[in-house]
Length: 85
Image (cartoon, rainbow, N blue to C red; front, side):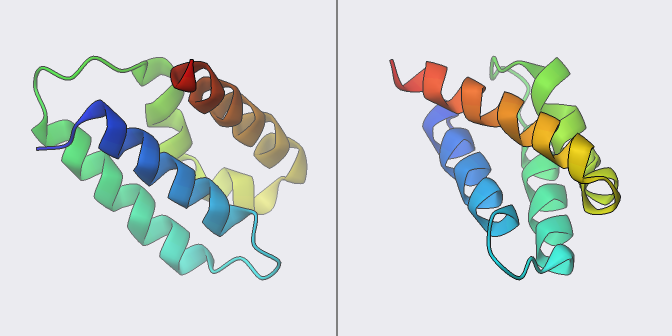
């Protein structure tokens, strides 16, 4: 079972992968799908699905559009920072 702290750690790791100099999009895709599958298995965890699900499914869009990547990553960073408080 994935805890909220584990979800935040996984999302942080995913962000780090995307912010690397040479992004390995195959690894980003695999990790995104892995996190998504874990979330689907969780029935009771409270998380902002309207933010997290698109982030996990739109890796192809972020790969193609720097503007969309910037926007989605910014939203994810803001979410992760807010969870630290």
